[in-house]
Image 1: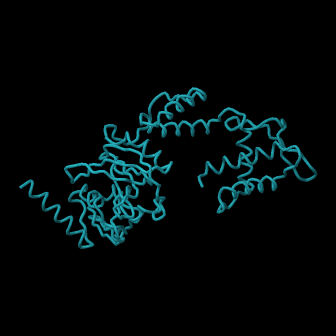
Image 2 (image 1 turned 45 degrees about the horizontal axis):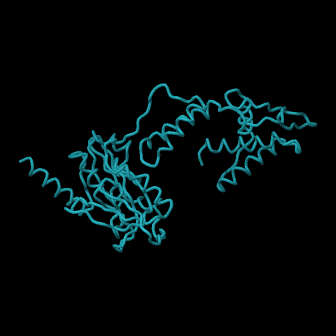
Image 3 (image 1 turned 90 degrees about the horizontal axis):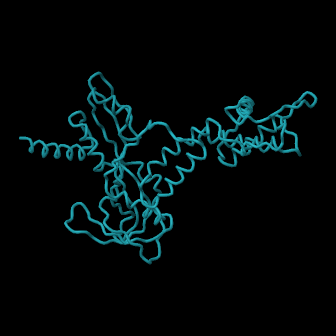
Length: 335
């Protein structure tokens, strides 16, 4: 669980304790209240110690936090903590600097949806939050990689709604390798972006566990009155773990892929791994050999080709041969 999320949960727990006139909270009681709240959210939480609690109280008291009127009261050899003004609540306070910064970052992320059909509410929400909390940014300091001219983005809103509402769709789709468009009935399950393109995953009548279509090849989308078939076969959080990109070959099995990287390309691949399974097998001043555990697919071949002569496929032989054949065909175009 994220650190900031942990902190917010603790502050809310402490806020309830400090406002409670019917009970005295000593340090151990406050720690217990925080830990109980954390366990409600995350059963694997290890809780907090005394030092963290004192840091939280210090932050809540600070003007950059909540300026909370937290007082300690002696009770024999112990001390308990409570707001001196029991009507105070951190939920009634203006945003502190940390919260304001987090909200600014969230608004920047929301801006990625600007202009998309059925996401018009994002513009309205962004404007209202900027006015309400005086969060208008003075300058643009971050830009996400995005192709604003890419077709297909106009379908995202309708497809998103169809997935959420479990609506069956009739889609007019133009595959790359066909001269004419086709009609398909699809039960939509998942949207994913890869390499600045969006893809829709769902179940059609072709017998495959999942059908993948690119949004920029969709021509028409229409809802149809059919019973929605829920997704009972694929966990999309794990579906793409063994591939590069979005193409998961039917009945494909992950295998060891060995690549030899020239020294001048290695720094790029070291800092931006080809796949999460990447590990070094051999490293010299001239080259680095890495191992991936993946299902070979088109996207992996394309990524290897993007480094041209700087990457050599050592194994498996089937992948090496496919890359060799493509290199041969490319070379013929320049002879």
